Image (cartoon, rainbow, N blue to C red; front, top):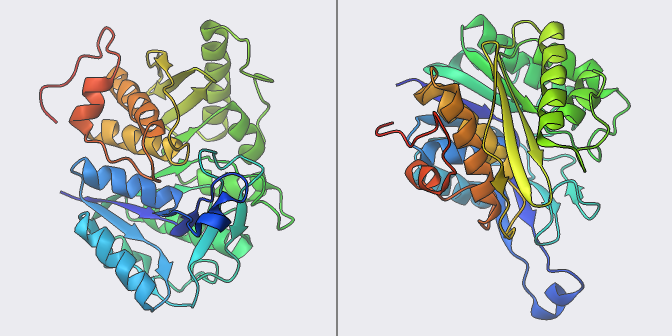
Length: 343
């Protein structure tokens, strides 16, 4: 079985409690994550052969992390050991990465210092059938964006599929280049995209088909998503699969455009949120899982991805700890969305 490779920056997330309670308690939870690593961890948990590629410094903290990842059946053989720092960020408990309280501390990390030509992509991607990237890494600076483009271009030349999560982080895009200028050449290498209407506007320069999701009917949201997806495919005709998400205060829905067919997940109730970080990454992993396991059943693909994302909202930590079978058990099943008997 060929591996799914995920490339991006491994990050330590420090999650202080609201107000200064973490100071008096001398306690601040630390989570190991990063968008691409969260995808890799979910896929490995769900039985996929998974490879994670990044740059980490040659010190004991990174050694401990790599040992922990390898125990989760993630191939870390192509991690580049270089530099001195691990990337970190701070986020108050219970909030998500769009929260104003996020503080990034990623400058001069091992990944931040990567340069084009430093990774032998023929070697790094050998034995892989897929490469997953996100828009977070290119948001660091032009050099990181060039490394991501180098990876995607090499994968495409090797006949390896490419997926990109269009996760837009406005606080990261600060190096003076409009995001579409960076992301358009990168997306031109991809066959699978995940995002939403507003990410397509911010990262690809396409007109938003909806100002806000608040107060809109399910039919209006579905129509707006379809219109935006068609604009993406017109601009990037090599993209064959697009998935959008609508996360509202009390409901969640995924929309899929796959091989010309538009489908939507059931509208799922959002539970009490234990940890908002990683829900989108879990959706992305669910999308790749579905494309691998039941490519001819697109309703199952979007239903599983949405159920996985909602389930993650109830879990603490950056990546899901729930098996694929248990996610199916929790999913709201509709016509054509019955729990599969085998994976």
